[in-house]
Length: 49
Image 1 (spheres, rainbow, N blue to C red):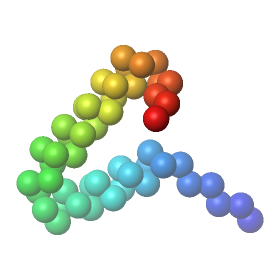
Image 2: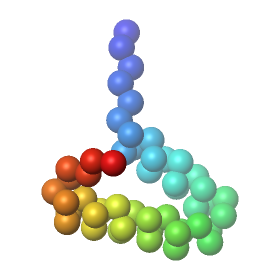
Image 3: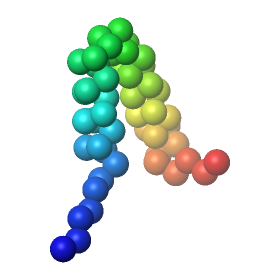
Image 4: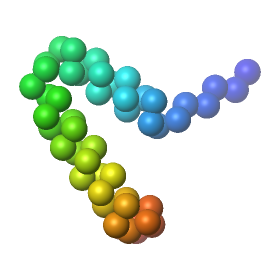
């Protein structure tokens, strides 16, 4: 049996649990999410570091 985990749902689950435990993290999580989505939009998903 193969188990494939995508990173998106896993990050979402961890973020949701952290928000339930520490609600102040919501602002930081949303800000980081928006920054990442903005950078991916600007660079077309081709970030090379």
